[in-house]
Length: 321
Image 1 (cartoon, rainbow, N blue to C red):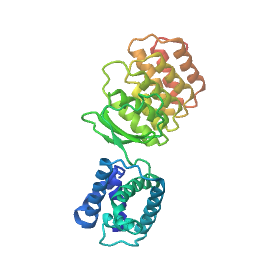
Image 2: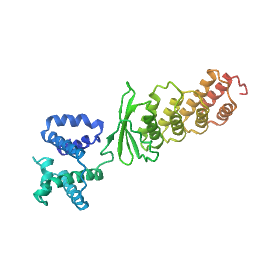
Image 3: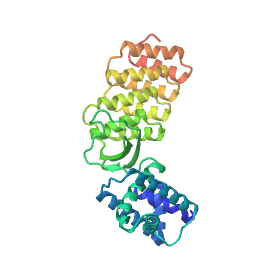
Image 4: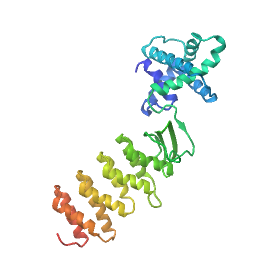
C-alpha cells in the first residue's frame, strides 16, 4: 500500500470508522512512520479541543472554513502541499492567510468546527460516534434508525457492541441478553439491507443462553426473517434458532408456512424435522399439521420430502398413507 493511502486511514481510526481488517496493517505502518504518528497525535489533539469548547461562530466564517477545508483535502489527496508540515501548521497557514492576528484564536476554534462539519459532509457515515452507557435508542419512541453494524462480538462473555445511525451515529455495548441489544438485533434482522449483518444478527440471537421464554420481539423478528428474508442462509438460521425454543403456536404457524411456501428444499426438510420433534416429544399431532404434511405428500416435487412427510404421519399413528 502506498504511503499516501495511510493518512486517510489514520483519520478513520480516530473516528472509529476503520475496518477491523485494516487495523493490523495500519498499526504496523504507524510503528515505522513518524509522519503518520504525528498526524494521529494532531488529530487526537484537535478532537480534545473540540470536546472542551462549544463555539458559536458566524455562519459566513463557517462557510469560509468549509471551503478552505475542502480545498485542503483535495490538495492533500492529490499530493499537493504534502511535506514536513503537520496538520496543525496547515491550519495556522489557512487562518493566517486571511485573518488578523487578534482573530487567530477564535478562528482556529471556528475552523475546527468547520473541519468537523466537513468531515461529516465528505466522509462515510459513522463519523462522530458516541458511546453512551445505558443509552436506549428506542426510549423516546420516535428514533429513526438507518443502519446497524457489528463492531465487536465476544463469544465467551456474550458481550456485543453494535453501531447504528439515528439522527447522528450512536454506539451501545451490552450483553446479548440486554433488552436494548436484543431490540437492536431484532431491528437489524428485519430492516438491514446487508445480508451479512442480518446473518450475524440472527446468529448472535441464536448464541444467547435463554433461561426463560423467548422475548416476543425477538421471536417476531425471527419469524419475520423466516418468512420473508430473501437470503436462504438467514432463513435457515432463523429456523434453527426457533427450533431451540418451546414450540409455540406462532412458531408452529411459521414452520407450516415454510413447509408450504419456501422454495428451498433444505428448509422444507428442516421444517418437517421440527414437526417430527414435537411428535417424538409426546405432543399430539394437530389437524393443521396433518393437513400440511398431507399437502407435501401430494404436491411436493422433492421425493425425499414426500417420504419424510409420510414417515412423520405414520410415526404419529396416522395411517391414511
